[in-house]
Image (cartoon, rainbow, N blue to C red; front, side, top):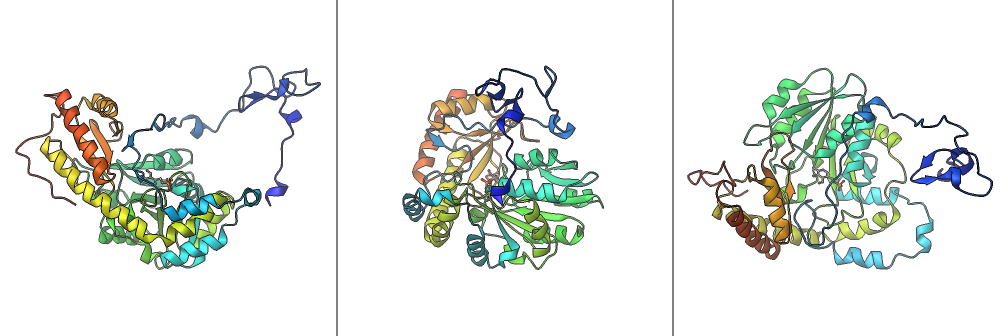
Length: 409
Ligand SMILES: Cc1ncc(COP(=O)(O)O)c(C=O)c1O
């Protein structure tokens, strides 16, 4: 029960700076400092946490065309906005009750309620899954480049991350992944479609991995499912080691509400629920979710719009001879070369935010561009043309005019 959670009274925090507020100076009579700890001593984090890299996504000043975080670039369904507008202040006094909405989501996905957990975005699903299964001596297999947060959350556990590098085509490194399997492999995390490449693993490849690694959780992150259309969700519960995630942050346009879904066999989900907070999905998100699910027509319209815009933007990229990778998602990875940072800056100056992925493994000089509506991508194409002209010769060392055009995907 949340009510019985231990609260640390301020007087016990005397002498420690907590969230920028020094309780030693707060309140009447608190004149002594350092009552509980020697001067200068601070609690040490676990060694794994000390070794973690800081991750600061560039989220500041984004009031322009946001093609940098693969979000929905327009809005969520108007039906969701109606629900938000009707939320009473009184309803916020209650703790969120997730089970009825979880059951609704399970039905929507054709799964049993005990196979489905709602999470605070897929990010929490990743965090909780890793905390549940990754222990000292375990290995996380990670085809790279991929979504940054897998490595971030894995690095906080005692497990080892084994990166499986994709080749220059950034195709799913299936054979290399199979070769890296070991009895220590505990989780294999596969974003499908993958980010930042937009590439996909086939159903047959994923099922082979599921079969060849019965000791491991095969975590298939379908954050971009709606743009791809292929899924393993139908097999959740029938395979003992398959776990699938979905998000409401992309096609549904609800990134700000933080809503994710983790679906797996009940036997695995039971362990996940021990680690998952029963309160992590807030009541605003829970209230909105049924309306979001109901308005599938809205999601379908947005996805069709993005797919049309993606095809047109591919043509625009080809026209300025920028190399691109085939994408099954709402973004495209492009090759800019050594002047990638300047490209990102010039695009921003032209009113379009794009994401430099140069620090991703095997992605030096590459930039990811989210696909929005056709109108937005016309603006992006104009900015692209202007930016490439400004960069001039030498901006794209790897593009060859004679390179065959990539098929639209
Ligand atoms: C592959 C992948 N998974 C998960 C996420 C995060 O999803 P959420 O907003 O639900 O935490 C992203 C966000 O970019 C992503 O690219």
